[in-house]
Image (tube, rainbow, N blue to C red; front, side, top):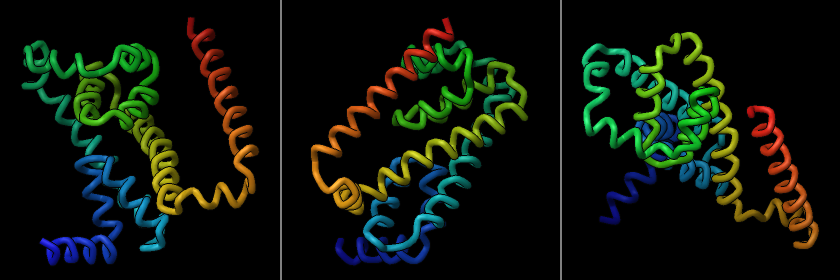
Length: 193
């Protein structure tokens, strides 16, 4: 088993963009693992970003095209399809009715519903051009969150503690950022009502 792990490690080390592409094509979670390895200095962040973006984008475009196929329109009321739709949290569905970008962005954080979400979006009669740009922006935003989180985890968050020198300052800034976040979210919800 150990030789297999070593072979996989060599493959990841020398072809991070390719591995990131395939992980973006199949599942987003491995991209965070690749970012952790990048934070440990195994390879740079750019190959991960480029490969993951290409894989995520290509998979979403394929799912959108599949969702437009006639046979899927016929089965969208099938009991299995209804089960998949129930997996989507209510708040994601409500947001998706008004904002495709947020629906795509939020579902990237929830394991197992990306494909179903994109197919569901394609059934909403949304023009391809609109989906293309919304998906493009959502993937960029997700990667802008996921890759730095993984990279910092790989660094062991030492950069933050070196920057803040003391844990109290770090906690104070964290609390302020959380408060600002909730104030902004509240304003967005109030404006939408």
